[in-house]
Amino acid sequence: MIGYVICGSFCNFENSIKVLEKTAEKFGDVVPIMSYNAYSTDTRFGKAADFNDRIEKICKRKIVHTLSDAEPLGPKIKLDLMIICPCTGNTLSKLANGIYDTPATLAAKAHMRTSRPLLISLATNDALSGNIENISKMYVRKNVFFVPMRQDDVKSKPHSLVCDFSLVEEAAEKALSGTQMLPLFI
Ligand SMILES: Cc1cc2nc3c(=O)[nH]c(=O)nc-3n(C[C@H](O)[C@H](O)[C@H](O)COP(=O)(O)O)c2cc1C
Image (tube, rainbow, N blue to C red; front, side, top):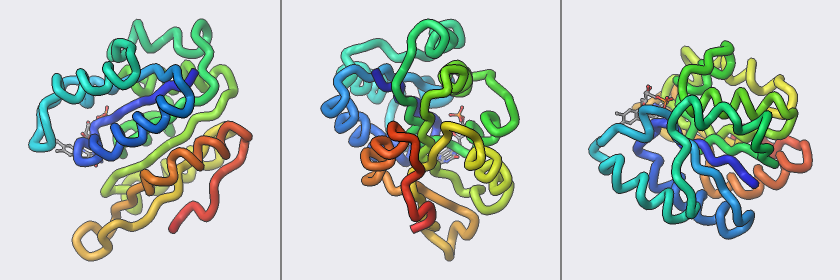
């Protein structure tokens, strides 16, 4: 069983849903988890309720979107792998600094208690500024892996890094066998 966490990088929701479809096809049972913001915010990229419906149809499960439903995803419900896709700068910084006040971060914390792999698919425009230390903090953690990422627009977003969503599947396989997919920066 795979945990699939979606955070509020709304411009990447369509990318994430494609990865979710592939993940569900490949692994069968996928538990969808969303941050408060991802679950409830309507943006120019679409309405929260529409995304939520699509996600629940793909997974054939209700989305975990509360702290009380996220907390058992480790001690009680053991997941083989948790994928955060997309992971915002906000969620990365919380995980790196021990803050677990959303369903996304609490699910990741609960999962990390089991020493099973956590795969981070980062998409944030402060990756090479405010969040650079948090990337390194998480990179050196045991059982934490990153999807290879790149500077997506050096001119207008010089501090941005976005993972390559087409590599999530391969990075997930590697994470399941305890290795980081390389090169990390592509
Ligand atoms: C339209 C829109 C697009 C956003 N895109 C991103 C993004 O790609 N990466 C990111 O780190 N934050 C992005 N944000 C900001 C996050 O949604 C915000 O920091 C939020 O607090 C994240 O909460 P979460 O990490 O709990 O999901 C975006 C916000 C909006 C409204």
